Length: 243
Ligand SMILES: [Zn+2]
Image (tube, rainbow, N blue to C red; front, side):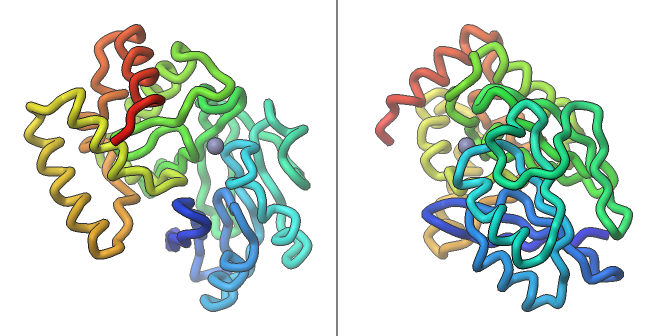
């Protein structure tokens, strides 16, 4: 049983604690910073045993060293980016399984595109996906190191997971993503309804993450694109979109 705690940090990052009450332990996904993460674990009486990094960017790994220093935790990150992950202990990639002290485990998926070695962690039993900066609500990560083809394959790998998968991405980009999505697909009633709900939630300061994969498959313009060429055109248009 995993207890997910969402910690908003910096401008729009989300760090996640994956807690296990039985063992009073937790793992941290993509700690941008250390202090609020250490505080949240302490508040719940959980010992941090692992950090799970999805990619090397500083707003996902900035807390690695301080958290490891404070807790002695094990840092797990993408094999293809291990040289860039601060204080990494264990490098993983597609097909590997990461098991936490309470027995909960995640399959590792290679999802390059945003960065060359980006990975995601899929807790299949619980239906939870931690996908960093690959899939966002109604959006996807920018192509900093990968090609449109790579990102297209990565997004479709994620889209093949069950529709009731809860997606925990690393940023609150939903409102801006949705504004772009509406320019692509203005006649999509499900998208219009979703955006109404997103605006209501954001107006009250509520997160729009996690979200259901099945809903995103019907409303995310990067998942509804029919071809890789269409995907690439939409990604390029979003890069310069001023919503
Ligand atoms: Zn990133």
